[in-house]
Image (cartoon, rainbow over all chains, first blue to last red):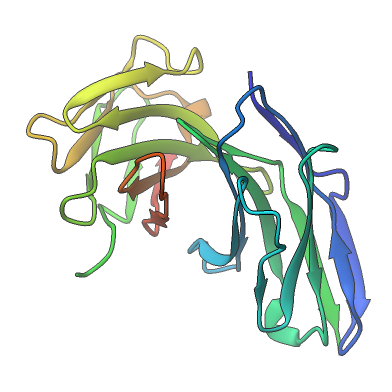
Length: 111
Length: 115
């Protein structure tokens, strides 16, 4: 069965610093999608970034980028120039037939 | 397109009562998912549909839980004889799923408090 592991339950960084959130997954599929979503206190899930497994190029979205290592089954998220609004719970998702969530990393951006 | 809509957003019920949540996905999305999330935890998979067919149901779902998507559009999640342990947010998501694309849209969740 697919699993997603986020090994950092909680992290804190100073505003403007760079932070990396880790995610590893286990799958037997060759074609799948990986996502990072953030969930602020409002609880609405907000898409941060998406990666198709067949694409070798790492996805980037403004201050957010991923380091996708397919062989290692690793999908880390880097947030550059972190902002107070980045404070949220971050979930790593593996999607093929089902959506499998990691347990999340609670990220605090400190002023 | 108004996104994924969930109703009611909040429900307080007495133990033993039945509750039903509704999810209206983005129109024409063929996949619909239900998850349960408790405070500080990640969402746990409950069930999902491809059109009107329920493809999988988690073992987390006891016989008190049932979900339907009768016409392949909206879905309902019913919990019978609620227990305090059912208190959680019930999250719905939808997507247009095929092998070449998959973008997931989440509702805002339905909060259940069982007293």
